[in-house]
Length: 329
Image 1 (cartoon, rainbow, N blue to C red):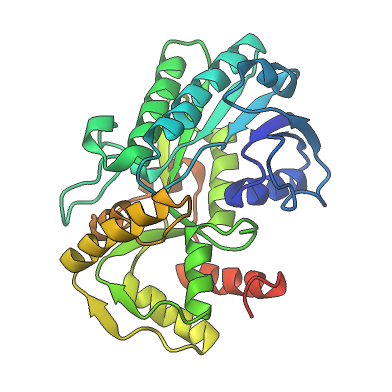
Image 2 (cartoon, rainbow, N blue to C red; image 1 turned 60 degrees about the horizontal axis):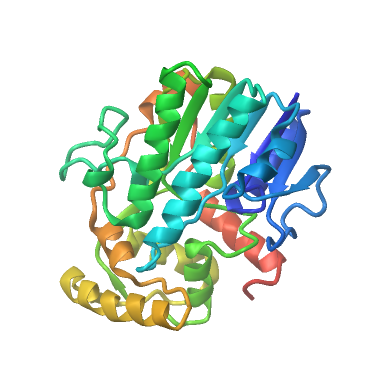
C-alpha cells in the first residue's frame, strides 16, 4: 500500500513513518523546500516537494496513493500567530481534502489535537462527546484545529471522502529532532535555566503510541469519528521530579502561584513574539497547564486497541534519545 504523509519531518511524523515502513507500507512524504529533513534522511521514503498551502503541489504528492496521513500543521503557543495558523491549519486542511477527493484517495487520516476539543469542567472527564466548537476552546491554535477538524468531519459525513481523526494530547518521547516545546523544556532544565515552576499539569502520551494509534485509525477507525489519544495526567511538579531522577539535576523548589505566572507569561510571550523568538512561558501555555487534565482515551482503547505506555518510560526514552543525539549532555 502506498501512503502519503504530510508533516512527516516533525516529531510525530518521523515516528509514524518509521512504523509505517516497519509494517511494509510504501511511504511518500510531502516536504516543504525550507524543511529540515534530518529526521527522515536515513529512511526509505519518496520525498515530494510541496506545501499544504499550495493546492497545485498536492496533486503530485497524492496521485496513486491509497491513504493520506495529514499531520502538517503549525503548532504555536505564541501570541500574534492567528492569521498564519488559520492559513496552514484550516486552509491547508481544506486543500488536502480537495486534493484527496480529486485523486480518489481511499481514506484521509487527520491528526488534530486535544486542543480542538473544549475541555470539560473541573473534575469532569473530557471525551469524544464534548462538542467540537472553535468558540469554546482557548487560543488561536485550538480554534484553528477545531475549525479544521469540523471540515474533515463534514467531508466524511457528506460522503465526499472517508476520513478518520485522531486527537493526541501532549506528545513526548524520542525522535524529537526539531525540539518540541517539551524538548525545549528538557533542554532548559538540563542547562539549569528553570529556577521555578507553576502549579497545574497536562496529559502526556508517547509519540510511538500516537503513531500506533494513528495507523490503527487508518485500518479500524469509523469514518467521521475523532479519537482522543491520551496517556496520563501529570502535574508540573511530578514532571520536574521525574526529570531530576533521570538527570540528577535538582528540580526547582520555588512554586509560583498561577495568577502571578499568568501575569509574567504576558511579558514573556509578547516580548518574545516581538523579537521573533519562541517562549516556553506564554499566556496560552499557562492556561493549558491550568485547564482540566482529566482526559479519556477509552474510545480509542475500545475501537483502535490503543494502549499507551507509562509517561515516565516515555520521558526516560526522550532524555536518552536527546543525549544520544547530542542535544543535551
